Length: 188
Image (cartoon, rainbow, N blue to C red; front, side, top):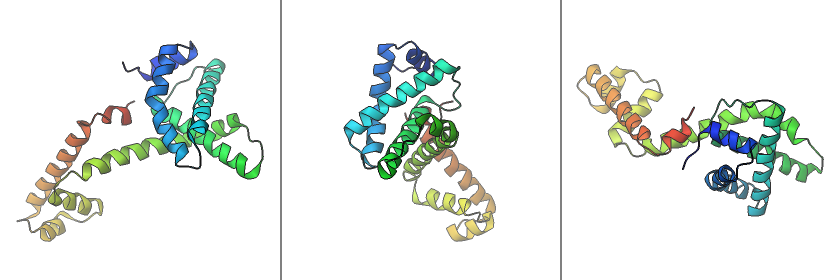
């Protein structure tokens, strides 16, 4: 069973074990990978993940929490910030308030993860396109004119280049939207 972001937040506020188990099974693996790839181990990841849940719980007790991103993005951002704080503390042996870091950096960190996940999904499906479509879309991204695209690709004219560009964009979007990750990455 999948929970909506609202149901997850409600479950955290009520300490619902089913929701907490869902959060752990659904979101912990990516956090563990992040920590292990950044000078940490699984125990660090478990502690940090638990701390992130507590931070969310405390924030919700202070005031209603309204997310502008999906829960995956939110918890990843919190964990990332807490881990950066932890690494900084290890490096400098200085105490830094996790609440202060969260207040100052959370808004700018959440879009970063979301953008990264969207780009990863885009890249995954871009690689699946045929060579012609890849080339047409690359040239489009480089702001090459339709006339030049038609010359480079050996097309009859600008109209065909325009049609081909449209077909390639449609094929890419269709492929991305059919991916099971699409809903998670573009949720909310």
